[in-house]
Length: 285
Image (cartoon, rainbow, N blue to C red; front, side, top):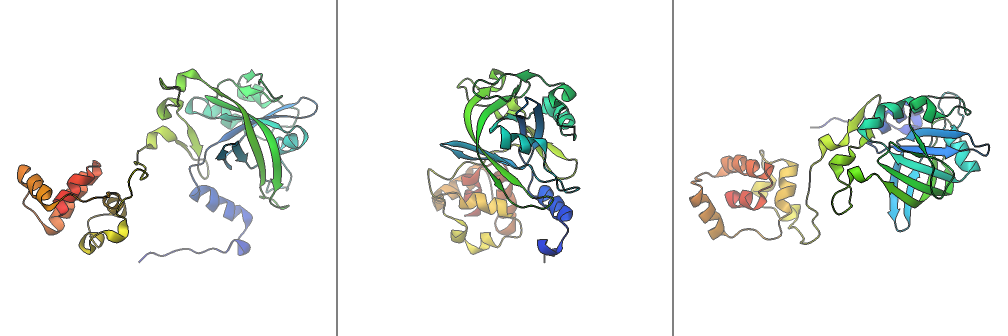
């Protein structure tokens, strides 16, 4: 039986809650945000409280949090209040160390492009600069800033509309779509941890074309198997129509399979590991 540590955020220090949140909600994409103030001072800073929330219109949101130490706000947030524009640069493995350099708390008159050794590129439609080394750069207009609180650790949702996208051609497939391996993204986890996203990719076919039978329709002896995992059962439940008994018998005969019970579950598990779902069912039937 599983044991759980249960926490009430109201009774727990904000720093502890932050640690649990960023360690459990991971890995998170990184918005490498380039902003500018009214005097023309440039700021470049990464934020992992970030994601895309709409395609039409194209909307991204990132959230600079108030500093826990002294409850002050970051230069990036000050800047988007004054100049409601931002370039959200995507971070890949080749630039992650330079990105990390820029996250240091430099004074507002210091240009993090210079400190990190990254290259400023003029944007087409907005004032903030793009990061040349970034594989994808989103020029954005800030639509709204939603303050979530006044205490240290409180977020501020910077809601941005993408007005222009720049993609490095080196990351593209022949159809001009992004190759998930060529882009070589990095993402943020808890503590000092990052992940190199391409190392963890795997594919799951989307169950849109045909409705799977569902977990509830699995035979009880399969559903209660001590061999098959939840992921195994999920694959089995994704099939819409089971093979016939004659198909099952023919498959077993052709492959000299003479097993039943838990042994059949062990063999079916091997087929499921290779995504041979229909053949796994032929063994189980």
